[in-house]
Amino acid sequence: MLRIEDIRQKIAAILQSKDVRSRLIFTLLMLLLYRIGSHIRVPGIDQEKLKILWQSLQGSLVGVLDLFSGGNLKVISIFALGITPYITSSIVIQLLTVVIPSLKRLQEEGEVGRRKINQYTRYLTICLSVFQSVAITLWIQSQPGLVSISSNLFVPVSVITLTTGTAIVMWFGEQITERGIGNGISLLIFAGIIVRFPSMLVQFFSNIGSDPISALETVLLLALLLVLVAVIVFVEKAYRPILIEYAKRRSELSESKSYLPLKINMSGVIPVIFASSLLAFPITIAQFASADGSLAEIMTKYLRPSHPLYELVFTAGIMFFSFFYVSVIFDVQEVSNNLRKYGSYIPGVRPGKSTAEYLDTIVTRLTLVGALYLSIVCFVPQFVASGLDVGEFPLFGEWLYAALSSNSALSWIVKGFGYTFYFGGTSLLIAVSVSMDTAQQVEARLLAKKYDLTGGGVKVRGRRMQQEVTDGQ
Image (cartoon, rainbow, N blue to C red; front, side):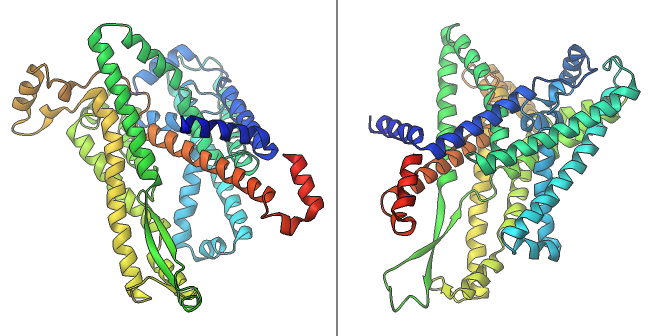
């Protein structure tokens, strides 16, 4: 009851705050425009034949890209490329700041440098959009009977439409970040994921209304989904505090303490995205390049969900990209130098090299735990849907598969529940993480307004400015 009352109070505070209310309305308006654009198709494409084509590309890179386009890629809407080029450009620019000194200096220049880096990211996004739109257009045109207008008209119209659509989506994201609530790019991906929620509800209710066994399985799967959400919330909020003391303040405030919080999952969902793309890329190339389909058939056989080789490579990919990405975004040597620069230190650890080694040990352990957490969250939904094909294990695989499949109580291990998990590991991570981040930003703005009205801003603003803020609420 206390939790419900707390939610009611927060909703009332949002409605009373003019700033937060206007930002939320603006964010919802941008997301609405984004979803409207997803129903506007690129002209000249037969949608029925396009559906058949996508069915033949199951398990390819299309599924990964379609996740971040919000379902726009499978219908080739004006937002078919989605926000993927912008995400790729941001990651590339972030990686280049490590190897290019001029970009590194730009990053350290504050707001001015950040604006220049954002501008470079936009330029690279447009270049990638042109490249991807040309590739998609030429590939669609090569499919027999898929395009109903002349190629001389279809190619320029399609390329211009897709590139412009990406620029509009990028603008939507930046406007949400600047004038709305939350991270605009993340919210656009979140919107594409959450639209599948009604389909999941329909499936749940249809299974509950059928036989008792299906109803029991549905309830258990719903409980599993809630457990996964709880685990994600717990891990995403968890951090390892590193005690920091200041040499200049020790004599003045001997009891004051500061902490350097290190998140358990420092890399976020990036390793999962990279690992999924890495596994789907060979299948996509094989399907596009192989005329008789034999190569694609071989690749699909071994690089498919539930195959032990796929799960092994997928887990190894998550591990590798977790350590790689954390090493890029968190430089222990730089943190150690900053601590020394500002006269602070970690108690019991010598400044300089020893501090860097100490932080490196902690970050390595946290990254290992975070990578295992990402692997489990991504594996569980897939395992529930299709099980684990133990028959592919060498030597004893066939015997183990026969033993498990013949046992009615254990057959789900190799067959799964045959249940379509609309919220897969990547989708679930993004949806929960973005929801938490947006809720925290709303609370932060409400607290800032409350602080302005309860004394913190009175000393600076004066009575007249205080009255204007009160009237604006």
